[in-house]
Image (cartoon, rainbow, N blue to C red; front, side, top):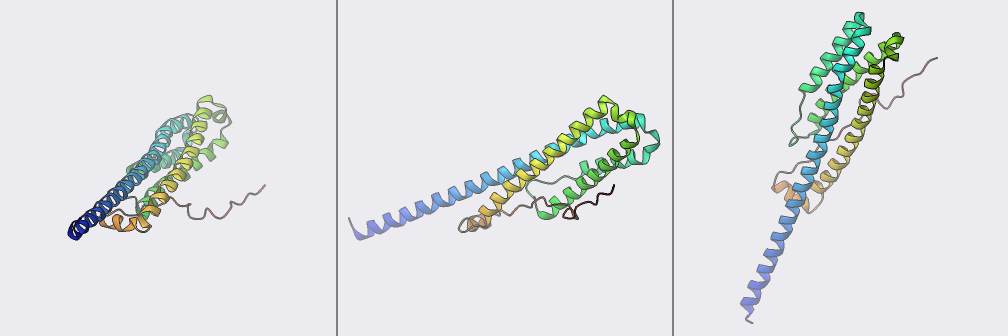
Length: 196
């Protein structure tokens, strides 16, 4: 073989290898990005489940605690606000997740106040519908925690891929950006004070 032919074959092999590396890297980033979007969709799914349970819970409490209307109204207002905050899965930045988490945190606080007032109503606590709704709500809160953890793990894996060399070159060429994480609520590091 001629020296020119060998050179062309070597260059063609290098170009072909580079093409397959870029293709595989890009496809890997797309797959990881889709996994983050799927994990986010599941987070939204369990938050929606909680939002769907709230009207039934409020209606049940309302029958027993008519004079607690301000608490019931605050729960419904927080639910309304929380369901209005949406996050575009293609923009899962720290700021957008923090805004979403803040609205959901307000709803959690309102629900906590609602469940606290039920302590004053023994008939309500004995009501089977209320107990079932409360159990479903507790289960949903556990699901929320689990799905947020799964989302953070998926986002961490994706972010590692986006930031690691040499895939970070492909990521920057095709505008793959890191995703945000769910973080603990402010003050969560301080244990609540229990008094008897």
